[in-house]
Amino acid sequence: MVASDQSILERRVIPTEASAGPEHVIRRVIDLSNDFKQAASRRGVRLTGIGIGAPGSIRAARGTVVSPPNLPGWTEVALVEPVSRAAGVPVTLDNDANAAVVGEFWSGAGRGTRDMAMLTLGTGIGGGVVLNGALWRGRHENAGELGHKIVIPDGRVCKCGQRGCLEAYASASTTAQRACELIAGGKRSSLADVVSRGETLTSKHVCTAARAGDALAREVWEETCRLLAVACVNLQHTLNLERIILAGGMSAAGDDLLRPVREHFGRQMWADIGDRPEIVLAELGNDAGFVGAAYLAMKHAGVAVGATTGGR
Amino acid sequence: MVASDQSILERRVIPTEASAGPEHVIRRVIDLSNDFKQAASRRGVRLTGIGIGAPGSIRAARGTVVSPPNLPGWTEVALVEPVSRAAGVPVTLDNDANAAVVGEFWSGAGRGTRDMAMLTLGTGIGGGVVLNGALWRGRHENAGELGHKIVIPDGRVCKCGQRGCLEAYASASTTAQRACELIAGGKRSSLADVVSRGETLTSKHVCTAARAGDALAREVWEETCRLLAVACVNLQHTLNLERIILAGGMSAAGDDLLRPVREHFGRQMWADIGDRPEIVLAELGNDAGFVGAAYLAMKHAGVAVGATTGGR
Image (cartoon, rainbow over all chains, first blue to last red; front, side, top):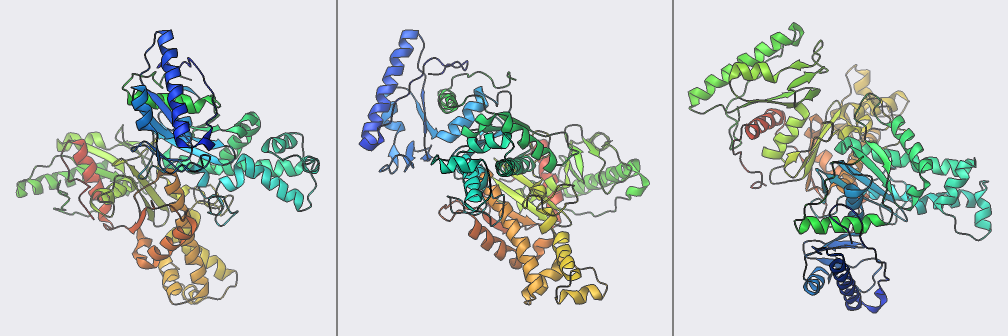
């Protein structure tokens, strides 16, 4: 539960129990809404709306979720209608990645900007673009797929089927995967010990080994940062943004990620232009999604939300 | 002179005589304005505003031209103020590339869209992005530099100083240049005859030879089209546009350009998404710039301009 001044009033984490089917999940969302209504009433505040961030493809205008990858058996399930009917307040629905972008924009690392983008570095690479203070959705609501911008034409095959996507090189998973491939190819690295112990190699292992001076890890980590910087250069030439936010699990690397991305950006971008975007780390972590969903719900309900021009 | 219904009423082409200095050029622009005022009066129409598209970097808000590449000795020259004072109507100023994008959007190949981009393939590669029916300028009015998106990280050095820009491979000039380099490197091609005749090799030679089956020309032309398609894929993933327009001198190649760019786009972009942008050729040629400048002037003057939703 988020107030219009950006403060987080209540937090609930519940399992979706998706295997029990859509009706059961919708029932749980309605129960959660009622729980929040009571919490609001106890606090003497008014619940003005409910924002839902759902995984995968959604149809915002229809209020439906379209076959989300982690919810098997769901094919275009109406979420907005049953929840708003039961809760008696307006309900908005958006993609969880979009919601996270909006959350950082409103209340996190994007505060004070009008024009920004975010790259969410996890298993894949999600993204989003905010222009003139609003999420840019595009013609068919498919904008902001920044992980599937091609950075190496005809390069590595991506899970999406394209070749050479940013996601095929610079996500947390593919960063680890590139290291594994080099080790499997016989290259020496301290990371080989992780693999031979039977552990799953992660981007965190790569980052830590790179910092400790492991040559292979350094090569892999630098490549990740170089290609993230290429994506930032290309965003800048296309949209001339104020800020680009690095988010997701891999952004926990902090300065070990930020510093080389900024350096590669500086080396690759026009030297003589003073209008570089700030490249920064996300601030809200896992809160970004529900904070953003709440913001979208408040905007929809006509609530005057805290301005984004005050921060930083 | 352009009417609000998109019809072109009068055309004047005069040399700038830039070597005589800024004051002389401004005098000539004022004379031209007076000429148009008289023409308007003869036709019984009202001149509501004047739009100027100037080369190089401009400061729209200040109404100044900042050291344009083809106008030596100009350093932030005020254009809007003297012309509007002399002409007695509002004057708008924009970059000539932006004006051309707006011209195609309003009255050419972009008619009927809200969200589109244009790649202008000439000596360099210019560009522009229209979102929600307006030119997207970005934080420091530097958006739409689509020729300087990096397509081959650490690739060929571009005139702009970056490496691997689209412009370094796929402009009219660099397409010809890549062919020259291969020939100079000893590769056989019918294009060698052009060079040995002392002619300057152009992208048109490359295109014509590729159509005639010359292997080297075909390789070079395909690479140009492949990388233009990469740029289109990346625009689409970022912005989810309705249409992408190929303009500039090289677009005279017509279907010889359009077909392979579309094919490469189809091969590189997600197969299972129905929301591909139309990739089309520009329609207005050299008229695009002044038509767009006129549109911007009319919008500025509050004239109801012909809607863009009717066309195609």
